[in-house]
Image (cartoon, rainbow, N blue to C red; front, side, top):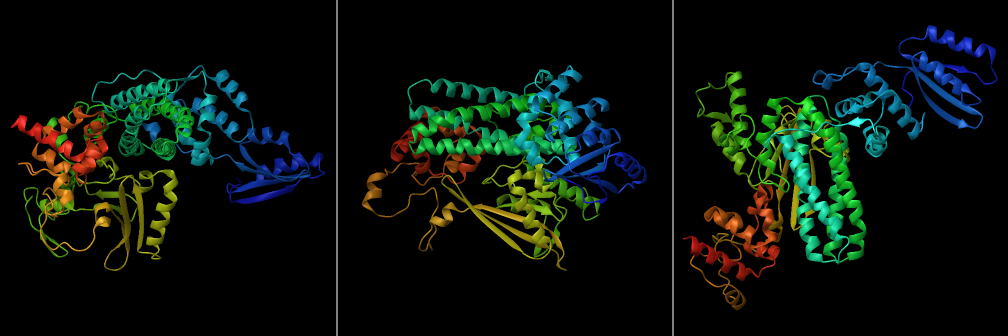
Length: 588
């Protein structure tokens, strides 16, 4: 695409002897903000190499077979990348790699020629060098869309020269955690490959897909934790490109599960090779490029801080890893809201609002007087998830409630909001912010269905007393229960108590027990009262294995009843209640 600058036009149609002299003189007289527009009656291939040597890039527009317009612009020396402050690189080598990639992406050479040039120039290219070159491409007007679509082609150029050192990191290190998860995801893929050659059994496939679906936790931690840390070092290509690849995998897994649940066996089986290939491809990109580059870019302290936030999101197909660095068990148990409390206190101390020793100092808020601890507790117990993005489009706050709809970690704080969303959603995010900033709108609402849950999301423009735009407040809530309400309830009724409906159906269905456990008993309240029940359920059926995942359990514990849990596990509600009662009796 030609740049929007002033061009000196030279019509060279029919010209021969004076044409070269005219070009040479124009180059001498050219100002820094000018380019050369050449019109020829044929594509001027000989000019490309000549102008390249003189320091020009070009863009071609073919009007007809007898009219070609070529726009030459002076090459701009790319700005040094922030990430090169943390990775030692050879500038000459990086520039050669970039040139080969650009020549291929612009169609100047074929894929085979690009591969030959790469092998002829380099014995090996490291993952870190590959990553640096990807980050530079943006300065050459190669869009993230094009990079995402052509990533497999780009990787093919490096066939035989891209090398990755085996990563040796201890248990508990965040990178080791990703590697352990990859190992276990591969085990699931191996079982899926084996199942394709055996008789189709729906339940066995359902169990495998329950495990494969945990890859969403792997993605969430990567997107909220690892990508955020890399962005702070100037490496934002994973956020811009890999997030899209992750979402494509989410979508195809969801599609396959829908086929399976709808008993569309043929469609389901036909999709499996593509599912396996996409997941494997993602893991190879992580192992060969993302994780080795992360090791070099990030400091030990970065990984220690990352480990502290990893537990907030949870883990895929593995148990919680041990503590890492100076992360103690006590620190692991603290929520991110405690960190928020410290940060708020620090800011207030800095500006003289409170003294370091006055944690209980009462502050004047809009309508009342509260301590920082009370403010923190209010946010923690709100029955709605809040996130706040300031006027500079930086994420400043989120409320860490026990019922959170989507996982979050402290790594999101200080991050550009655009990098907290998949690329497909960024346009919508920017449209909302623009409309709010310009005063065209004050509110935007969305709703979506996630399995059995109905999620309501509303965005509000935040403005100060004089009407100045100060950011965006996002409020999100699982309103499944609210949507199901009918009539009125004017009397007190606890969720974990049996409803007194006096209907013969309910009387016959549920038996009284001394623990007053009913189909309406909330699983979170039950496990809080009897912690051993969680392990009991996990051992009772493979379908309860998801309870081991802290994020999923945290989400479902706030809303799932025993009736819902029994349906998931394939038990009759009363039968499951009886088993739970018997287990409590044995432990008493």
